[in-house]
Image (cartoon, rainbow, N blue to C red; front, side, top):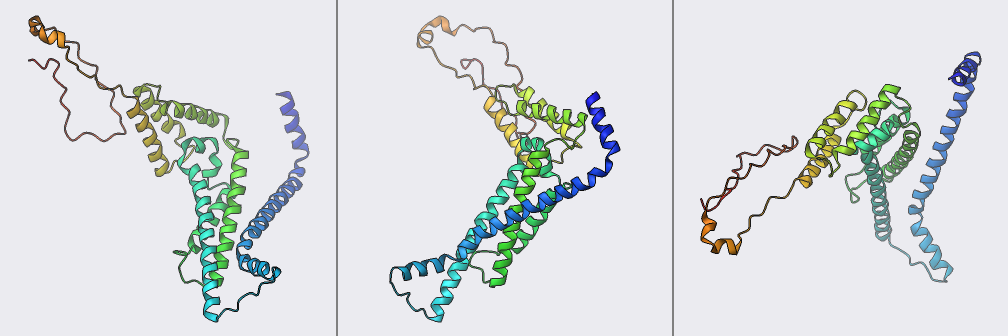
Length: 297
């Protein structure tokens, strides 16, 4: 505690050092963004050069590159544009899937809350890049678009990929450091309760209680999307369904059936306890009738 107070006292006397540190941090982030963007553009540019590489290989082997008509040249350009768009679509979808992995998994939202917090600058920049890439995405790879539109979409996907990588690294670095001590304790309790809620070895009552506790602890800390809540409810409901005990199977003893004394009425067994009802499952339209205990009566 004394060491911490000394550090605070030193920073209090050297408050001006914050400004050069902020400048250095901004320069590092800008440099990382530039390098990532340059690497991504180089990766995508190779798609444009496929045709030229093929022609160069034919020329190196002494083969004559066939002369193409204007229609064939246009067709080749269309095919090249279609192939490029298909590659861009695949990369676009891959980035979106990686982002949704954070948005739909409550455990990841608790572990890396900054990834779902639009107030974080890098997360906000990623969300803006996503919005632009989604808006510039053609309807299909066969859509008739200009070369300028293809170039704009290529740049948008590149910025989208770079923004996601930077936001993800920052979220994994921050973790829960932006929360207070009390808030971090609530996150820890929510994480523990979440494990119980999806634990098949826990009783249905324990899983239901744990699910409610997760929602209570995260209230006001992390804004769960409707899709994330629905995904969590499906997991809890699945565990409740798997955790139910199998229905007892009634069998007839052939020896007892042949015995005339077997028809003597036996005392009624104690009724099964009322099962705990899953709050996530929809109510049955009609109540189920319990099977008869003694089929001979």
